[in-house]
Image 1 (cartoon, rainbow, N blue to C red):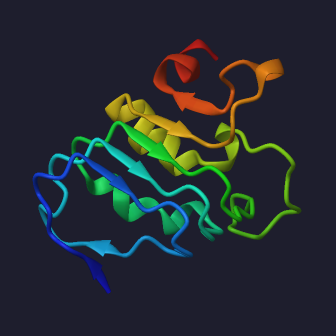
Image 2 (image 1 turned 120 degrees about the horizontal axis):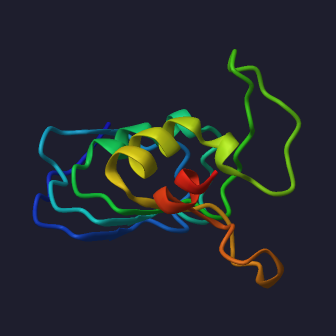
Amino acid sequence: HMLAVLPMLRELDLSSNLIQVVPRLAPKSFMNLRLMNLSLNYVERESYLLPILSCPQLLWLDIRANLFIPVDSRRIPLAPVERLTKYDFPGICQRLVRNKRGNVIIADPDTELGDSHILSANKLDEE
């Protein structure tokens, strides 16, 4: 399966759609996409999100409330964690946050933890 070609689309809200995997994208399919909301779906692994990173203008990716199962460096599932961090998304951190200076929303806001629910280039650079 492949998502449609919509080169002028800037925002795409696919939240609450029972999505498990982001399908391959046709070349030049979302050339101007800046925000994609994939919250409240059933994505289990970071690798299932990687096709969306081919969108050259993507700056915001919302992946809150999915079923993420952390894996180790050998891709072996680990016990689920209560709070996701940048270490659960190494590919996204490198390809979207560091390289493109984008942002990823990984959890609902928590007033006690500030903006730790957002992965951003500025925060990764500080560490």
